[in-house]
Image (cartoon, rainbow, N blue to C red; front, side):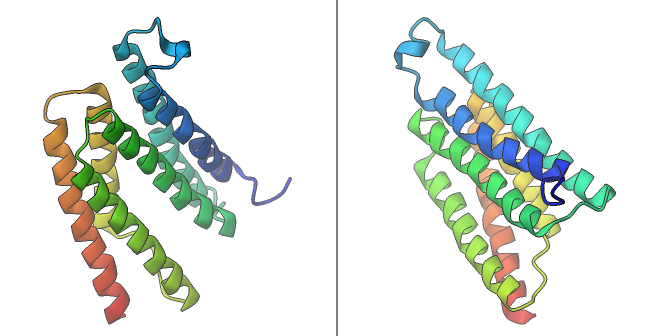
Length: 180
């Protein structure tokens, strides 16, 4: 079997496949397929898909480190899968008017900028490992998306906390890139 097609990479590919499926449940609420469904069921399915995808994010990294299955392909598709999942979640929530366009803009702008910065750093041979602030912001973003999908109390406040943490971790990456 191809060494790059290991379990962690298959989990990341699975997460990539789940992102558009979740987006479909969030934004195609008026389609004929869902015409007899109560909107809360669409939330439940989108939420379930998001939880499954989020759990694969934890396990692909854990397994890759534990079983020494880190690959160049994994270094590319794992962050891509994360970004696709977040993009699907935030855009879907914005379309159904549960997430502020400003919050989504700030988060996605930071993600694109830092992804570009990380590509430059890799080209220069610099370390691009995720910082603790970056890991915390990812967890808070995931919790915020889950709360927003389920339309739970304090979801909007969690989204804005995620924005602050996202911008702060972006500042850290930028500072570290230019000082190291």
